Length: 378
Image (cartoon, rainbow, N blue to C red; front, side, top):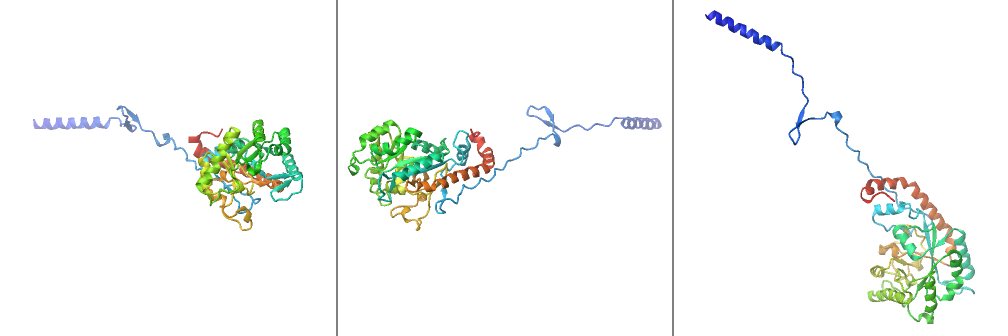
């Protein structure tokens, strides 16, 4: 009995061992991950994982265009703080091309006789200057055109000139000297208007109302009393009376609000600039011929120059100190503007070449940092 039990146990053991030896091997299964819904999904292999998008590094922007044709103490001052805004306005196809240049020229007194004052220019020299502007492709623009160009790079002629006649001249003065250029070329001129009713005994208002209505003489502010400067010694009350008084008089007499202040004598101060801004003025003009204007590029000084004391008289401050270049724009004098024409044109050409050399860099910078929020350049 015991022998048969042991023999049966041995046979059962051999059968179990034989069954295990004949079972097929188990195949490996892919790694499974449960989804949020509980359904298992296959985990991708490393070759199936997409690579990360490469991060683009914006290039360094070029420095502000410089030129040796300006006095080293009169460097260009940019005034647009937002880089993306500047680049978009600079390269928009409907705006002015880089290198567009503006020459602002002031005229004090044109005389048919001999020149007896440093502020005078002869009629012969006046016509020579105007003809040189014509011959070199300049075109006259208005205060609104200049404002829109400087603020937004709006389209203006590549070589532009702003003509400003200081000190409240009468109708005949404009008809004799400037109207021929209006008739032939549609050149406008600014009359820097002194608002005191009896300035030097000149009763010139009726004729100027006619000129304003004809549309080619633009009256802008030149103070009320005029011969007391709005410099560092002037009180806020006096500055306000000169600036607001000009606004009131021009609104009353010419039916419009002036947007430019031609600083009497070229004098200004930090407070006069601040008050002018508060009253709505958008441009201001000095009497210093530091250079031409370009978009986001105004040559100013930050120090007083002992070699040019008349450009920094007592009571004045360096233009750069006000931190508002559009309110202290330079102007060339009619007496020597013709000598600066070549330099002005060369500055424009050099600025255009410099811009083109750096265009790809600036557009790449804009595409990386600006386009995602500001959109493509028009």
